[in-house]
Structure formats: C-alpha cells, structure tokens
Amino acid sequence: MNTQVHPSKLIAGATGDWEVVIGLEIHAQVSSKSKLFSGASTEFGGPPNSHVSLVDAAMPGMLPVINEECVAQAIRTGVALKAQINLRSVFDRKNYFYPDLPQGYQISQYKHPIVGEGVVLVDLSPTEQISVGIERLHLEQDAGKSLHDLGANDSHVDLNRSGVALMEIVSKPDMRSAEEARCYVTKLRTILRYIGACDGNMEQGSLRADVNVSVRKPGDPLGTRCEIKNVNSIRFIGHAIDVEARRQIGILEDGGKIDQETRLYDPAKGETRSMRSKEEAHDYRYFPDPDLLPLEFEQSYVDELASHLPELPDEKKARFVTQYGLSPYDAGVLVLERASADYFEEAARGRDAKLVANWVINELFGRLNKEGKSIETSPVSAVQIGGIVDLIASNVISGKLAKDLFEIVWSEGGDPAQIVESRGMKQMTDTSAIEKAVDEIIAANPDKVAQAQAKPTMLGWFVGQVMKGTGGKANPQAVNEILKSKLGI
Ligand code: ADP
Ligand code: MG
Image 1 (tube, helix red, strand yellow):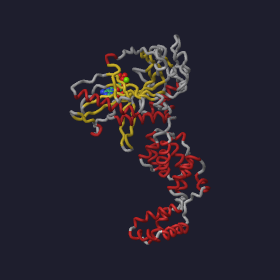
Image 2 (cartoon, rainbow, N blue to C red):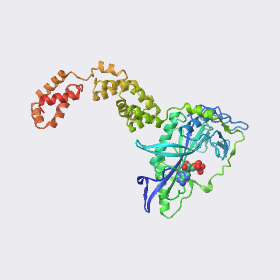
Image 3 (spheres, rainbow, N blue to C red):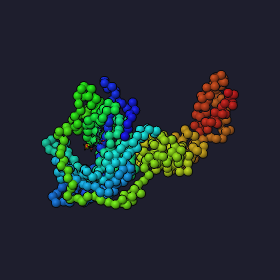
Image 4 (cartoon, rainbow, N blue to C red):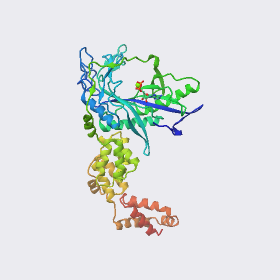
C-alpha cells in the first residue's frame, strides 16, 4: 500500500490537489480445452451455439462436473501472484436473471475463494516499481452473449461462451494514477501469458476489467467509489480513469457528493455514464451450490503445480541483468513476452549478449512492430540474427551493411554468411584498396582538399565520398585514418 503519493500523480483542482484511488477487478478467461463444468469446447469464434452442452444450456436435471484443468490454472496463477492458496473453497450460486444466462444463476465463489491475498510488482519504468496487493482470485462461469443487431425486431442468444471458466482477480485499492493502473494490467497480463493460464487477448474479450475509481484530498479517508464495467483495452482503462476522476472532482468541488454506482465508459464520447445506482444493486442471494461439493485438495498438489511453473518475468529480468550484463531497461523489454525472452537467449548463446540485445530490440522489434507481426511470426529467426551479429563481431561487415543484410534476410531469408559471400558485401579491410579509393577522390577534388586543410570538419565529406566509392564496404575507421594522414589534418 502506497502511503506517500508522488506530487506528479495528483490532479490539480480548483480547491487544491486531489488523489485518485483505483482498484481493478480483472476477468481473465482460463486457457483450457473445455468449460468449467462441462466438456464443451471453449474455442473462440465458432458458429453460434455450436459449443454448447446440455449443462451450458441449463437443461433441467443436468449436473455440473468440475474441470480439473481450470482448478490447476487458478492455482498456478495464485502461486505466480505470490498468493495464499486455499485448500478448501466453495462454489456458490449468484442468482440473477439475464437472457444469456439460462441457469438463472452464475456459479461463482463468494465467501471462500480458491485464492486469497497476494501481490504483483508493477514496473512503472525500468527503475521504478510499485507493489499492488491482490485481494482474492476466484473461479466463476462466463455468460453467453446476446446479439441485438441481427434483425430489426428480434434478439438472438449465442451460448458458446456460456460456462467458460473465468478467474476474477480483485486488486486492493492500491493504484494512484491511470498510468499505474495501465502498468498493473500490463504486468498481470504478462504473468498470465507466461504461465499459460490466460491468452490475455483483450480484443477477443479474454481479459476485461471493471475499474473502481474514487478521489480524495491527500491524507483523507477513502472516498466513495464508482465502478466502470467491462473496459476492454489497456488504453481505454487509462482514459476511463482520467475522465471519471475529473467528473468526481467536478462534483465534489461544486459541493456535491458521489453516489456509489456502476457506470459505463463510452470511448467514442470520452465519458462515463450511469448504468445503475447502489439502490438498484441486485440482491444476488448467494448460497452454496448444492450440486457441487466444496473444492478440496492437498498442499502436495499445489507444490507439484508450483514446481512446474516457468521462470516468471521478474526473476527472468533480474537474471538477464546479472547473467548477460544487460541494462534493466533492455532486460525489461526482452522479458515482456516469454517468446521474446526465449528468442533473445537462443540468439545470445555464445555471443556478445549486449550486441544481440541491441539487434533484437532496435532492429527486430522495431521492424516487427512496423509490420504488425509478433515474435512468433518473425521472418528472421534467432539463428539468423545470431549469424548477422557474428559477422559484425568478426568485422566482416560494418554496422551499416549489417542493416542492409538484415533487410535481405527479412524479405528473402537465407544464411547471412552465405548472402554476404555471394553478394560481395564483405567489408574492405585491405588498406591498399582503401588507399586507392582515397587517392582517387583526392585527385579529383583539389579545391575540396584545400578547403579541408583550412577547415578539418570537411573531413566528413571525404569520408562520405570514399564510402560511396566503395559501395559502403570500406571499414569507416580505416577510411578516417587514411584520409587524415593523406590530407595532413
Ligand atoms: P464489488 O463486488 O462490490 O465490486 P469487490 O470487493 O469485488 O466489490 O471489489 C471492490 C473493488 O473496488 C476492489 O478492486 C477494490 O480494490 C476496489 N475499491 C474498494 N474501495 C475503493 C475505493 N474507495 N476507491 C477505489 N477503489 C476501491
Ligand atoms: Mg465488482
């Protein structure tokens, strides 16, 4: 819990500075082949109602059967969040009517969740970390989807998503700015993807956030919160917090008070609006689901799952700094995705790791971003990047030619060393050949020679000419030295 808030995080109002307080409830769709209580497929995007079992359709008399893989995923996530794992938890019925919830209740966990308190270390920058507390994580069913835009006078229901397992991950109200909330979601998403518990795909709705926002004068007790439902991108989470905090400050400064309510964020209008107030809040009449026994397992089961977890991003980052001598910034960028970290390590094996990190981060990631590709679909493999770095390290090609080589490998593929050989891209290290090129340029430009002798900064022009004359293949350092001695500067 942050007690002292950096002044730059405060929002200036007419009556002084305000502090914004944020807590997030993240719904993360569990990666599993089948649903939480049925054998139906969880695959995204099938024809409507093609992945629906009799349990998901809530046919009378159907009984839910717990899917062990979903339980294991929740435990793995709890361990990765350094959280308390509860060896006994209970599934409850949360009763409400909704057209895409045919049971008339959602099976969820209320008083006894599978995972208790934990913590996430959030990177605000390569050198600044805050810790955000986790209140709990529980398992629950997702609902189906109502479609209102297929016809003018009718609505349709698609139950493919009905019964898919969700983990609801509830944070403590520990965040103090939109930026902190964005970084928290980014880190949580990275952790979930590392351990394979959720694909983190926000466009497909695999990760959605309910955003709780309140404001207060620094040092005051917590203010009344509003909850903004179902925000589905990291950017929108940031926007929603900023506009909601402004709205609340405006009301309070006008002498009003905040009503606790559920609101919706409208990205097109850049505002939040009321969905329902606390008075209209449902009474869900939670009670233990009589069709399901309490969920119980042994500590040895938890230990077994924990022992198979991969190295997590914080540990990997620390290792990259010590093992490879990378800066915390470069290490942080490389560990954002497990696949990028693996790619880097494969390319760095037996090589100058800092040089490899440079090429992966600057050239490769830059290019992948530009083309909207991911590391998994990179046209340049780790072996190929390693090959390019080898040619630079052994002075066969210059840094500039290496960029041309990267382009060729990117678009045509092939072995970098062979490409350099067959296209004659080798750097000229033969000084007599460079001297010959220098002599030619000097002989052709007597006026420039006189200028350069008067004004040594003209040297750059000569270097450029020699590089051009040698097709960029001359070693720039050798060119510099030879030119200086021949021009006598
Ligand atoms: P509910 O079911 O009413 O949404 P939960 O306990 O599930 O309640 O979630 C409450 C969420 O709101 C948590 O993420 C918590 O951190 C956050 N929260 C609680 N109080 C405040 C507050 N005053 N300001 C901002 N967020 C808050
Ligand atoms: Mg809530």
